[in-house]
Each structure stands twice: as C-alpha cells, then as structure tokens.
Image (cartoon, rainbow, N blue to C red; front, side, top):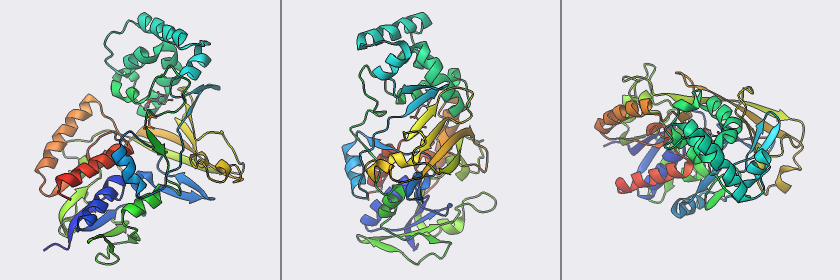
Length: 397
Ligand code: UDP
C-alpha cells in the first residue's frame, strides 16, 4: 500500500484546489514544489507591507459563479477593478479599447462616430476573414489603434511578428463603445485581501509548508483526509527524469509542471515565453498612479510596469499613506531551459507538438496532467480552478 493517495507536483492553483478536494473526499495527499514557497505563479510576497505579485500581476476575474463562490471559501476579495493605462511615447490611453481611448485617439465624441472611424479603417485594410493577430486586431479596432496600442506591445510580449501570432490572443481584450475602463468583461473581480499566498495556504488546509524531504510529518487533517506540503523538493532527478522514489509514495500523481519537461523533451521543446521582473522599492508614495501601465511602443524594452500597492484597493486609504512604493518592470523573453516558463505559445506548430505530448501523457498510467503548464494552455486563474474541479469530479472526489 502506498503511503499517500495522491502525490501532487506543484503547489500552484491547480495543485492546491486538487489537494483541497481530494482531502475533503478523505484522501491523503502529499504536495511538493520545487520552489521554496507555495502558490506557484500567484505567489505574493510582502515588501514594506505591500503584497508584491512576485511572478507577475494576477487579477482574479470570472463569469463563473461556481468558481467565484469556491474562492470565497479561502479568501476575502477586495473590489479591485483592473483598468490599465497604455503609454505610447508619452501619450496615455485608456484600456481596454473604449470610448475614452477612441476620443483620445481620434477626437470622436459619440459611439456612432467611433464606430464609423473603426469601420472606415477596417474597409481600407480590406480584411474579410482575419487569419492572424494583426488582421484580427485591425478588424476589431482599426489601424491606428493597432499601430499605437497593439503592435509594439504584442511583438515585445511574444517575440514574434503579429502576422505570425494566433488571432485568439487579442480576442482576450474587450472593445466597447461605452465609457468603461474595466479591462475584463467579468461579473466578478477582485484580489484576495492579504495576497494570494494566504488563499493558497488555506486551500492547502492551512498546512505549514515544510522544507525538504522528511515526508510523513506535519500533515494537516482536512475533513477525513489530510494534506502534507513540502517545498524545495524537485520532482526531477539530476538527469531530468521523474523520480521513481517519489512516484512510489502515492497511488496517483497529479503533475502540474511543463508537460514536455515530464517527458524529458523527447519529442522536442514546446515554446514558452518567460518573464524577467526588475523590482524596485522606491522612496515615494506614488510612482505611476495606477496598478498597471503598459508601454505599447516598440522601443521601451519592458512591456509594462506594475505598481503593486494599487492592487490593494480599500487598504489604508488605497495605499496613499504608505510612504514607499514597489514597482516591477516586466521584460518578456523566449524561454530557454533553466528559465521559468510563463506563457505557452499556442500557435499551430506548438499545438501540433503538444498533441503528440498529450498522447504520451494519456498512456502514462496513474498520472494526471493539469494546469497552464501541464496542459500547455493560456489559462486564466478561474479556468485553472474550474479545470481542477472538473478533474476532481472525474476522479470521483
Ligand atoms: N495587448 C496589447 N496591448 C496592450 C495590452 C495587451 O496589444 O496594451 C495584447 C497583447 O497581444 C497581449 C494580449 O493583448 O498578449 C493579452 O493581454 P492580457 O493583458 O490579457 O495579457 P496577460 O495579462 O495575460 O499578460
């Protein structure tokens, strides 16, 4: 008999939700993570009382009432609304594309004038069926907005020309003929008060993450099951192969790392974008007056600057009375072995290679692949949670 029912590789959102549900169903779960902390890329770290989104900005938003109700069990959410600003060579524009953006860009005042302007630019471009991101963007908002607010940002973010990128990426952004700067078309939105790390810790049953491999100690009871968490434990051995000794500890493995890494890249490397953050503590209370400013020109080397204190809506008079501020510049780069993978490049070439890896994954007995990296999918947080919950149902948990 194995010691645990499930070994969960990765203490991010997918792993934490799965652990929570499995333990509630009476299973004993071991969670490991290579990093020295839980919470994967939603990890938040405190600097000068500011919760810093260490692996990139995360704003929780969903239309799914079930998922929203689910996360409420583990955190209180503030009512932060994402409304990033685009900075194009010193000109500031509202995002997502809405009447404020169109007014600033063209001086148009009414929705009718704005849609005429977009229609005119669309006609001039002569695109009937958009085949790539560039054509999709021009069809949605016209050439001016494409040139000033999309092209530079997207090519820095993805490291590829917009003509070679899939159209769906840009469809993430709403286009509105109303004065509404809310970035997301979502019924529910917010950020956990106190940061995401606490929310994930609660999903993990409040287990104190232990360092190292001293398995069998420190499990916490969750309903009739238990969760034990060890950080700083790599699932892979020095040769890059999944560790058989770890697998033997449990009946089943839930693997949330990169799918190609699991198979030691034997069919080739899937492409990912990586992000490097330059984080600075500044001796001033307010740097940019907003949580996110996107630099949409092609010359500025970073894609955006995040000022973390503005995520904490409602805290301390919205952060103004903290005399300091923490900012992170984001630099996007092509992933190479040893880097952290962030964004899967879901184009045709990678899609095909992923399908091949997926076939291998399906033949891998007693291993479940899940999450953004395990499924090579540009998932938002709510979709990750939903997919973990669905997997739990499949497992009869
Ligand atoms: N995008 C853009 N200009 C912007 C912001 C976003 O062209 O100012 C495009 C870009 O291609 C990006 C995509 O929209 O990859 C999705 O942006 P989102 O903010 O959803 O990306 P994430 O927050 O996941 O990095």
